[in-house]
Picture: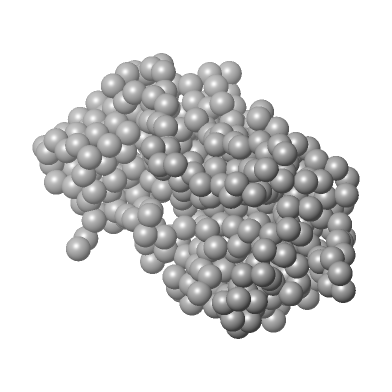
Length: 456
């Protein structure tokens, strides 16, 4: 395949404050004590995709990410790190690196994905259909915090406030409609002409756009040039291509109708709708998306396709603090095959160099990193503890993530919280559903719920 792979690794995401910092950009946030980007690189390597461009927002973040890649992947992969301006969006990032893109097709992968779905299958589907774009869809993940009050509690299922509404042809190969982030209580409007002409369209709200796409490079770059206001692949570029896939070349640009005047514009629009109806009426046949002729005009279409992952597969994006908690929990739990670690007979991961005090228990689905020390009479349940942490005696850690070099004093209780690198909790601190910024000191004796500890 004539294919290039682009990883959109982001920068310092506002959705993940205070977990991200100038020292730890989003791509290097730890999942089971490994940078989330390492999961993406392993996934691509497993598909024999080893020539990669990693796009990072911000020069400082790019230096951090590039430094880690140089030390971790230099012998296995050929990776070029490209820095773009901050907050340009996914579409803007691709436009900024357009001069790097030379292949016929571009496989785009979000740098915050933890998944076992083969991206090579998306590229193969894209090539087979000769599509303009192929989007990977997967089942809505079950997310939400476990009950932090005790071990073994059933997970609370957090239902999303918004859904992706997706329309598929009867073969489930072509994407006929997409509305992203639709509120359930609101109506979703579909064109009557499309519904009548298609004859059969399957509407789904149980699938999510996984942010893995294959694009025909010429189509992608043309859209980015013609639509300078587009910022997001999911919200702007993909819906635009789906809306315009059945239009003729003559009317591919919306301005053409306006320039022809009101009378001619109306006739032209009617003619174009007629051609669209003719094509859509064959949506369930092999002839869908083929070239049609109407009079002297040749009506061409471009294909918008989907690859629907098997429901048994795992795919979660680390794009919120809740998702960060979920992914860390899953990778040392039900999705432990993604971690790359060997689990003990107790179904946990305790590094040989870690030290445990007297009467201390580290339960199943836990991880204790290299060189960490845990004092006497501590209880760790469903949690990840990083490298070289110092945890005192009589400490309880449940459903939490403690990053490298953190210090936790005697008598602390931590539930459903994230303690970032080099943070310090003094004695008898109780945290529930809190986040503590890297290097922050939480003073002794306080009880806190739902708070964020960060420097102003």
